[in-house]
Length: 250
Ligand code: 13P
Ligand code: ZN
Picture (cartoon, rainbow, N blue to C red):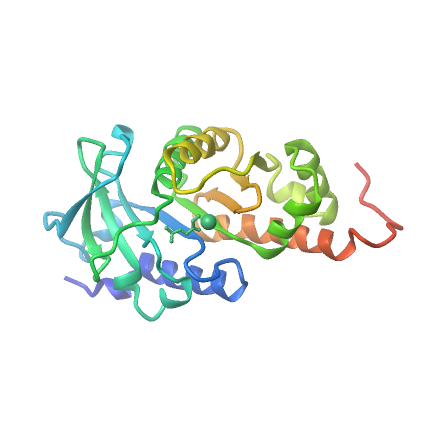
């Protein structure tokens, strides 16, 4: 068996968490990532017959049964993922009953997956129906996007339009725009269902006054989506209080 710490997927999780932390998107334990893994990717790194323990997931997702995910742990700090992936990350497989996660690696200190597991799993289901290649769901608390939530209307069309106006590339990167949920209690099945519902239409979903969700086919693509929105929000926050002299026309 190869050392799983040298696998591409653990490397990607480490690098992404470190970058997200460095950019200030994930203070303390803020944010979470889940990454759908193919059996062929884990082959040689993981014994699929060795279940460390089973963790109830608190909802039913039969359509994800048998699927493998590497996911960040609840209460774990993004800044620590790089130095100790085996404590801060875990690999789980959804059991046939759709109600149990089988831990195959990680969460070494007895931990469990993110409290946002409902939003992640329900979003994976929703995105896979639209795009069978979807693999990543990412949640974080980007500073400028959050700041913008307090001073800009939280209307989907208006927020999308303002973001598109801030950088020429925005409309190319997220032509589907951004979905917006009102402030809701996080870590619940209810916010999970609402997020997944938006994910049928959008790859970016703003959790008002909390953060953002992104979905994509790869870690780079998903990271890039959030990075582009955050850049647009930053330009908005740098200019919103100044007289506007120029604008990108519709
Ligand atoms: P977790 O530590 O459970 O992943 O929660 C962090 C977070 O961002 C909640 O929305
Ligand atoms: Zn959060």
